[in-house]
Image 1: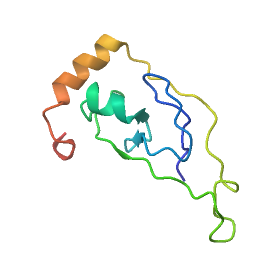
Image 2: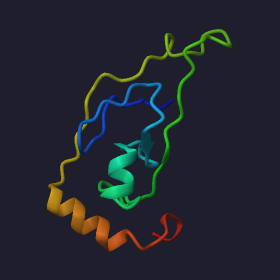
Image 3: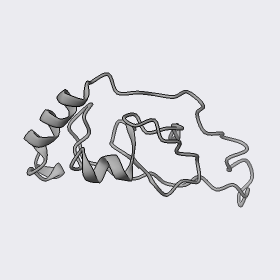
Image 4: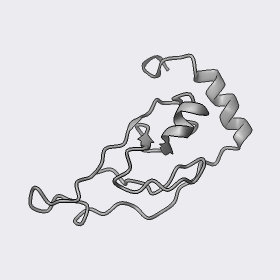
Length: 102
């Protein structure tokens, strides 16, 4: 199941489990919508993949054993290892290529 990481890997914005502002790539790298849209150009700086909205895990236990209380979000903050300049350069190089063509 998804880790539901607690922050944007670039700007460190809090992204709690119920946030609709969180985006993930297929490796679960997590970024906020502002970074994805305005800096990253829908290109993950870690892998080059595209982003999709991160699902929200239900707080209410609609089915036995399946809810945020049974499977809590991660509390480990993750940060990209790339510098701002590396991120900008990488994003520019992939920004015009559709994710499904990368």
